[in-house]
Image (cartoon, rainbow, N blue to C red; front, side, top):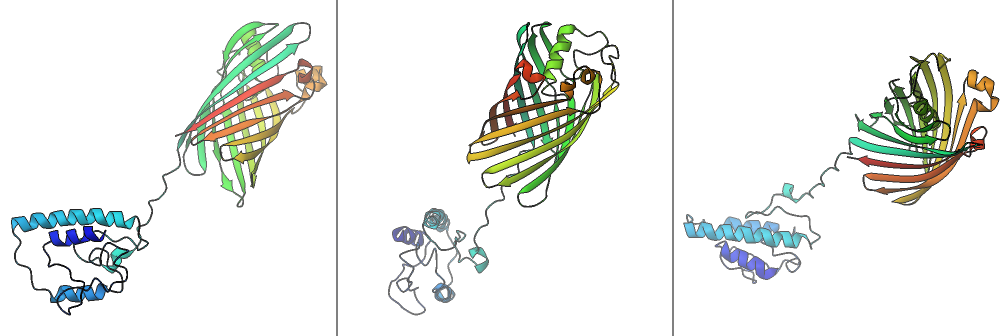
Length: 370
């Protein structure tokens, strides 16, 4: 490092450095106690000898006009000085100084501030899937696979909007094989903190009744597949009903545990299919609790309970009192890889009438932020 500084000094056209003190002639580098640690007192002067160096510069004779060769030599010296200075700044504890041919000003000694962090992702794509397996007594087993892609955008740090629609393929032992597209839905949510570890998120979602399996004369297979898929998502798999769903999420973080409680009211208003949907309006109350344990930063476990209850006594509840509510329990694992979140879980019905059908689900989720 010291040899590199001497080369810089010689290339710059100045007189040779002397390690013996001669007042008003040459600068005493040897008296600088930091000379062996920094490049030299010329490139990285310590606080103790800056004033002496300034006095030396004032007493030096005025330079003659530079020739082209001298300007070229000075340019090479400045370039080499910058390289040496950058290498030194990686090893020295002194505040970094701006590389310059002249002595840095005190304002240049301040530590350079780190750049601000990049803004969080504004958009996301999410795909949820649910494979429902069931067995109808005396008829046999069946399945319904529902895939629900969702796209969203963070309008601000607290406000988000999204849209989603589902595609379901299944086999009903009574109605056969079929495919349906659900009602599309638009939603929004707004999050705000209630404390350091608690977040409240009001939500609102509206689903529009244009999905398959609806109308006064629906395809029997499509109507059956939509009805089975509706056991997991009553909002978008009711093709004859406009759905308005206000709700809220309450999240609590405590160490490695994260618990989220959800509550929503599903309001359904019939817009078509009066011949097959006798109720002009339906209402459901839904709630759930999911508790996750973050084992490491990229992996965790969760358990959840979900509950849905019919408000009032529509015709299907009057025919079977056990159809007034539905409960599910399950659990799974989740992982995070930067902006990609993945989860895999299992759930099953834990009360009648769905438990009589041995209804169970395999659920997955993939969420990508960008």
